[in-house]
Image (cartoon, rainbow, N blue to C red):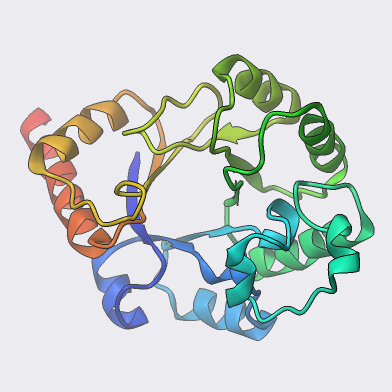
Length: 242
């Protein structure tokens, strides 16, 4: 099964639901909406529609990183040491419980933990991951981890196996080394501006067809158009193979 969607609503909800059956919610990374919003989205979505979502940046990103500016959170600098980088602190686990609550409202199957490039493969960070994922309540959720920066594939695979994580990647940049279903996030280059060519989408389709189950989320400036084109390509290839 190849599931296709965008990272965030690119149109009115009704219009989005008419074109796709999958979305990755982005705003949960910055600040969680109210729980009643999650229940409303779940109720308004058509049967069979799938939500996934990003975990709160309080878990993965440290407060000095610029993405915090969009959160509206005012964390005193003296408290920064308690947030981000999967630190096994009360603050991080509280952020996870809030994330888990919204994930339950949306009935998501997968939560994405996207790490910043500053989250390097240091002993401290590896130990933090082991402590956090070893204790974090999961219910029935799958966890997809997207490391960025210079993480050796051997270490990524070791951690994913040990901690039961899906290695989330941009397949135009790297190869997923562990986990099922596959979870791909296409970023469109460092500034998200790249529009995927037809040949790129053919390459992506061939890669996806090697997987029994895969989530394909477009996260570039042209995500709406590219995701529609890719979805149509998948349908055409399926029809030709039947």
